Image (tube, rainbow, N blue to C red; front, side, top):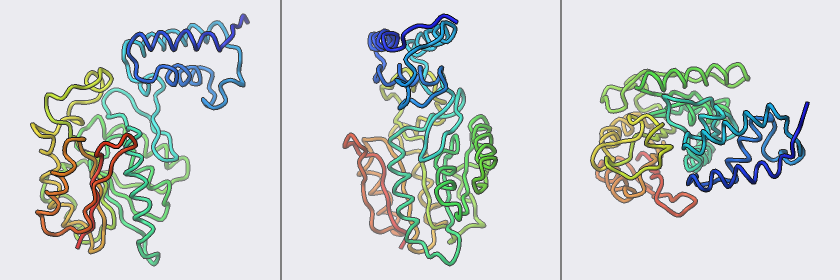
Length: 290
């Protein structure tokens, strides 16, 4: 089979993606090549040649990425913690920024007494990213995840089945509305950790084509100020958490101080801390149930 040198092909693809305005052209060119060759990106240069048929597939993928189709839709996968998740049209793509919220949750779980399984609730689970990553990292945890969008819930169930097949502890998925004041009433005062990556983008925000054209709008927009879903969640979170339980909520980078105030105004939270992302932008607020 005819073969070609991989390195100059990746350089060519990188330039194509750069001209198209893709934010990380080299990384995406390499990730697509790794996907076509079925290798890890870190081992890509151990495969200096690419078959002509693979090259045709690769160039088609690069053209799609240049059209601003999300990288994760082309590879079919996203990452959270130590697990891969299947994603595609109809479900929000987990972002690297949410890894910081995931790390916070793992650290907070360390403080839960070890004489019982810790109880975790993931609100607006989407693909199941946070819930499944936490269940993988803490197989002793009793993890519950809520999602209202039927398309996203199908992806979450698909990922949950994959993780069960891989040996992870099953999670419990709910078709539910996180703004419903009666949500999960059977868990009142029993939950150790609540995590949430809800729709939080203010309407009319300027978004990249990968987000605006491909992520479900229901998973993105949270009303005029981005807090329409978050506001009614707060009383429910306070009801679910046991004393000393923790919550972390991701938010738009314009809303850190306002979300912290909403938690403080509720009167049932202490230790309210605003956390930045790796770029230094406000990203999530954490607090403890008094």
